[in-house]
Image (cartoon, rainbow, N blue to C red; front, side, top):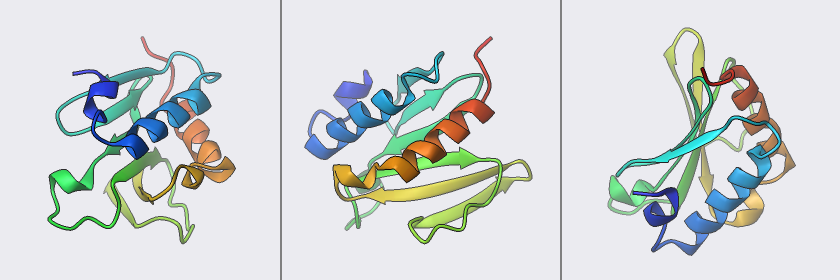
Length: 121
């Protein structure tokens, strides 16, 4: 499955995928992989994921969620949820309701996460 196929029935998901990919173009060495549950953005390790909560929830609040792995807790009220799965990683979940939600602030978080994920080997 390609990332585009993952979002084939979601115009917003397709637009968000394109926007996030564009924002990460200058970082370099970013690979994008799709599974049946998500689209992952990777360098040495994964640093961001796009997924569809409708696959898991009966009535999701958003069609698309962008999850970003940072090395710190970000206190922004924009996050739907922040999880701390390991001592070195904070997973921040952003519900995307409109393409405008992927703004300069989100671009900064994505670049921070990508640089932290290191170059692929």
